[in-house]
Length: 81
Image 1 (cartoon, one colour):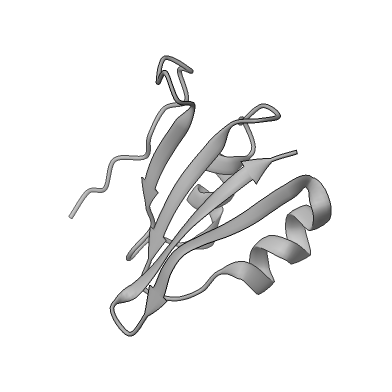
Image 2 (cartoon, one colour):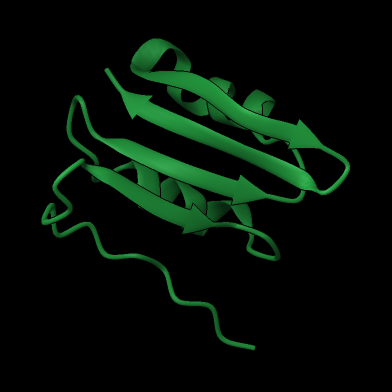
């Protein structure tokens, strides 16, 4: 199964870029976060919580806001500072 990785063309009016990471390795996730500019958001969906890995790589460069977290998965906004 091929999974499309979103392109950050900055045309979304609210500057929130969705990223469904279920079944994807961590490198594409980094590739989706890296091009974001300060103030932009990535709405991240996954089957597990990636926060320790994200904090290890980005530290205080990203803000983390949970939308939901439970047995069915997690939805988080990563906001670039």
